Image (cartoon, each protein chain N blue to C red):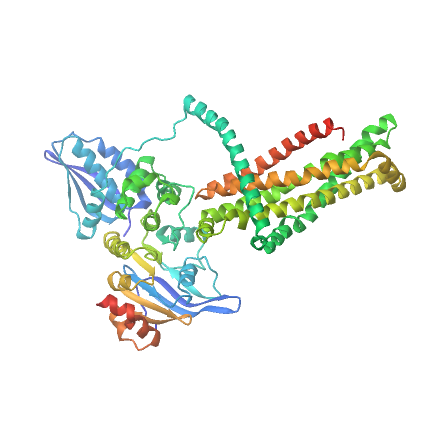
Length: 377
Length: 256
């Protein structure tokens, strides 16, 4: 049945016979390709060349095509080349590959300087488009919210509660754990460095202000962008891929109202709750470390904390939370709806949802910092 | 029910597959002859796709043995198994094309992974396969999301045939195609079987496919093969489901 393929050259007077034998199949394709390339060099060397395939024990598309390729290149050398000894089983296969037009492959993706510059230009110009897209989505969500206010029966309570469970309740353990650890680290670092000046107790001031104003909400927002923003993008993206969103639209539902509004609402409610829990966990962790590592008694810690922070610090922190949630949600939904038909595109948009989400959260934090500083809070 | 066939390319013995408490396949036996097109029918939910997926190793079985190309798949070493996998091609119901690769890359993927050949040969073989399944060369650089349902099936078939397998599994190849497209597809399977000497295992619901493309028909019911034989055998059968299937309104329309 099998046997290594060969291509022998047998001279018969003026004529040259190329005798193919053995199994000309995909398994031997690399060997076959080399043999055929060698034989192609014979082109034009003799007035009469033919290919004898009577000894071929097994033939498939690979073998048939390589024989056909050999025939073509020999013919191009000015000698009409025939294939002889073709058995009936294989003649239809050879006929089939004879119809193949081998076109030179166009090399499409060439890296050039201009191409790279064009790419950079396009990405910069794309930033404007991204911002417009985000504003459009914000508008669409607000319009859907207005619509729901006028007609409250269109509000999807079950869906909202479901998403609230996903993004809030199920996120509590990880958020509390991470902020607890961050609180511990801030406190330890503070004590370690403040001790040099004998100012151990000021660690409480630093911890309180830092956690309530900045770290608590910022850290939680970043975690939520990574955890829930990516989930939103992947969910909406795969729904888009399978035409589920188109199906909704054709049934007369607004995808913004059905899919996006409940998700946005859940996120906007969840982030302040998570930020509060996170801040408490961080204070708890910080206090614990201050006690065990720095020797600050819990009573002294609480007393100092009461003096160090005011309600303003807490308000500044918590006011930022729903705004950051809205930014994360809008970025995630825009990216989800931008997914095209391929798995690769889903991956790209999920990545960019998280990256953009975190970027905008930090930018918003900066804007808030300037704002609160100028109103003196 | 099983006729012992000496030259069986697939030999399935006493296969039992269970999901939770539902027994889907219950001591099923089946032989597929080398070089034939076997049509595999049965009511929806009878476990046709489950059997296909069990044979190709995607669904674990509770009991029984499966031999493909004379190799017992349970006893086979990893290398033997890879050898078998290289010799079969599978057309999934939804095509299962890799969505982030173009048609060209989809068809070349198995060839590139298994054989060390030049890019030129890869492109030529891809063009040959594309021609065989009746697609124009322009399709090569499109992505699966830019193809119609029928084109996806054809590209998936071209990918299944990329390594010139001896055995092809087709899971409902004509579902979702228009009658003309489905007829063309049957014709295509027939032609390829003749030119490449394929053995075809085809799960189908399409009566036309059964009449025009298949050499033999096997019928699945209650987790077993309830009948196997030619179209004439099926029509002569007294089994109630078979009578309904082959003498129902649709069947009469097909038979004229």
